[in-house]
Length: 251
Image 1 (cartoon, helix red, strand yellow):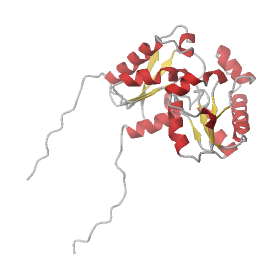
Image 2 (image 1 turned 135 degrees about the vertical axis):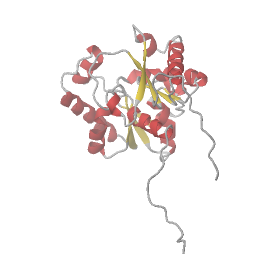
Image 3 (image 1 turned 120 degrees about the vertical axis):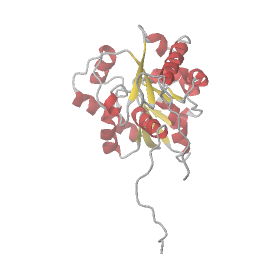
Image 4 (image 1 turned 60 degrees about the vertical axis):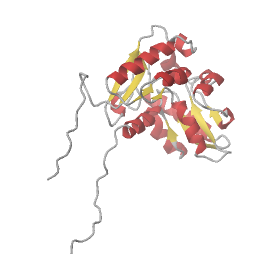
């Protein structure tokens, strides 16, 4: 009777079972389910690592020294067993190439890394509407880091200028969740009416809680970092498929 070879099991961590790690900034504003920083946004457990920046503006300007902090965060998460790392802040995208080049696991610092993949799936005339917090965050440097070689195929629809969102952005207060939902959907609907727009990508990590509302209002595919992380969780922890298999009868 054959006997299976023993399978060694690796230790070395205090807790286990996390497939995806998430880099985030220290924050205190309200976090809704659907936000990348809300752990119940995911069907599988995720592990967070906080980037300890007292002032986020150097990162938002893309200053080079922040890359080392992000690389250290990725390495720390990898040591704890994660198989992929994602970023919770769109400005992390400034460091995508440098951090990914040194990372021991796949790294997606910005949802914008998904844009080249999505654009290849659409006709050449199709465009994707991108919803960032502010329009200035969508620039040539971040396009280069995230592999976007034709920004003309993007329609940028920033949320800045809407009062409830501006309060959240400026001082971390969420005055009215339903009003924020309306502002977000209004922004998306206006973007969906632009010529050629065939999908919507939410770049601002505060807005994925309203992805279903956007889709109901526009009828378009909606992509965001929360769904990308769910995809990473599936890809790094494949499960067998249940179901009946048709077998040849014995007689």
